Amino acid sequence: MIFNITEKIRYIGVDDTSLDLFESQYIVPNGISYNSYLIMDEKIAIMDTVDLRKSEEWWSNLNTALEGRTPDYLVVQHMEPDHAGNIAVAMEKFPALKVVASARAIQMLPQFFEHTDFEGRTIAVKEGDTLNLGTHTLQFFMAPMVHWPEVMVTYDQTDNVVFSADGFGKFGALTHEEDWACEARRYYFNICGKYGAQVQALLKKLATLDVACICPLHGPVLTENLGYYIGLYDTWSKYEVETEGIFIAYASIHGGTAEAAHKMAKILREKGAPKVSVADLSRDDMAEAVEDAFRMGKLIVAAASYDADVFPPMHDFLHHLKLKAYQKRRVGIIENGSWTPCAARVMTTMLEQMKEIEIVQPVVTIRSRMKQTDLPTMEALADAMLA
Image (cartoon, rainbow, N blue to C red; front, top):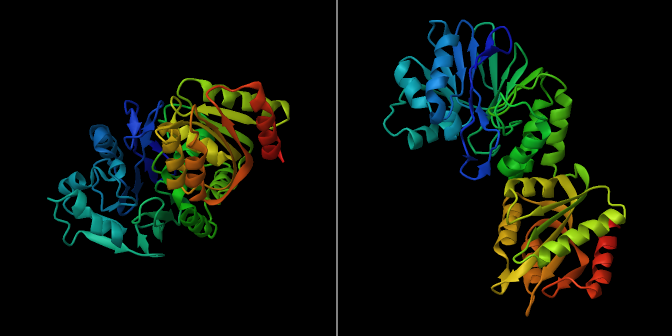
């Protein structure tokens, strides 16, 4: 796929619609794009490469867009293989090509490309450095841990374009039209979610620039209503509530806990909860469950006891939340146990390891199957969650 972003900036990225799991863990039903760009000036700069899975298509796009010319620079903003996969081949094909990257990225190059000689062919840039291409001047800003330590973003001072690395990216191929926020949110919290402070630092840098266009490494080029996208990133990276509501995540073995979770959802709706969403952690997409937990201000976890611990899908979910720095939320607990209920104890311990988490009382304990005698406690928890 080739198209012009500005007069001299071209998109040369590719869609990957046959990938089943991004980073071997995230379901991508609508595929994903590997974005790469080309700046055609007196000097020519390639802005990142793509995953080896799509090398042939990318090389075809690059050669077509070059129109017989030879690139001078390869700007590497991120060393993850889905963007850096073709660096070694590019260095071989274009002997005069120089890699422009952060010092940390240049240190990483031999880790990925053991047999490529980079001696004398790299330019390490630091915060605020510029590179003149002719009529275009590129300025570099370091963005460590968004979401690797070597990441930088590039600002084209001429066309006011930000090449934002993984920032503002989303799941989904470009050929699949869909709402940006849903898959961008799932992408953000599962890829960058842990690094809210670092994202905030990057947003402060972007706020000093006149930005007309954002070119991420995944997802569509953003050219309109940039305040909307930046505003969502600001909310997400501050761990603030995006949607008022309650997310119920349950892990049920034989259906008893599932019944209790859905009953709680019904109670909350009847009491006027603005939004209630329910997920089965054994079957639903874990990445979407993580997304919903961050999106809403309140969470109820419901799980069966298992081997003197908690049913593994719930343990996995809470572990994911901890990894992604889940915080600033109110959480209710429902446990189930046939002889010695222990799920609440384990879930509480895991939640207490997270920042600014309020455990809402009372904890609901179900014995095997929900009964009429359990309803008053469930009503009390619903009232407390809505308070």
